[in-house]
Length: 362
Image (cartoon, rainbow, N blue to C red; front, side):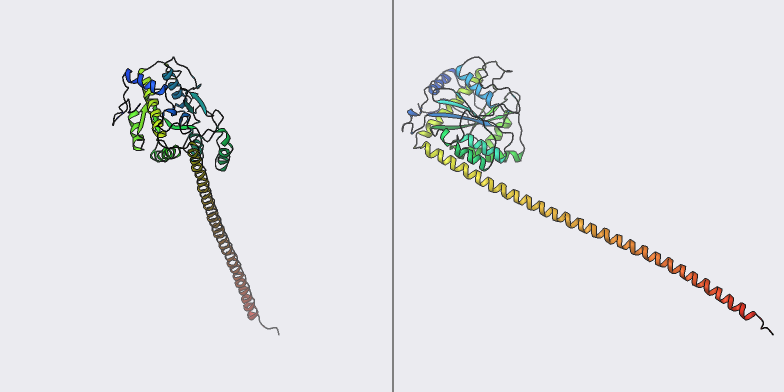
């Protein structure tokens, strides 16, 4: 099957296709297999839709929505999503969509800090075991976990990254640049462009969020309102959006495997990239810590010198006051001595005058 069934508009959000197009897309997704590639599967067996992003933005609800839309069924909380702002997923959970397509609910992060990004990259690169708990760690501990997980990961999985972002969320310019770097690294790791899904479409600012991601270089942006325990009403628009997204992901995967690929080399490349990333981040963090420690030491030295100067000034003032006090005491003593001397002199003079005034005895 060649060509895109859905004609995505060059400007603006995608609009739902007709029912005939959606039916054809379902058939394409249902029959998806890497065996259909012109070079054969080249070792790829399964397409992993790696769902990732900030925690609490609707990753688990999005997987529920995909399952419900694909099965065309009533609401079912497959992922046990609660809609908590702090997120529910603590491990990497898999949910099979078709025989050859699997959704992965990865653990989200609160902020794009270096060690959390490392954990997300490790999940996204499929270097961490599926259906196991994810314990955040950083630096060489993360590198050690990646090495120990080698027997538990499958190089035969083709990775398609899907970033979930709530349209009701807003980030500052600094966080936006961090997000740009993060998404660019995700593309480098997987070799596949990131697809963004905007959730909370009804209450969020979809136009603003889409414009931001377009500015960040994202070419494929979808928006929908997830099915949740509070919003179980079925929607043709939501269903068609999910089917179109799944179709584009599957078609892109086949396009990539139509060219020479080696899944084992791909995994080795991802592992090498991530281990280098961890090493460089450790060096950077160590440098920052060293600089921070040096700054603290300089600050401590300045405080010590300031305290010594203050102590010296206080001692100087104390010595000056003591000197002034001694001088006052000496002056007072001198005044007293002068007074005493003057008094003695007066008395001596009186006695002398009295002695001269006496008549000599006959």
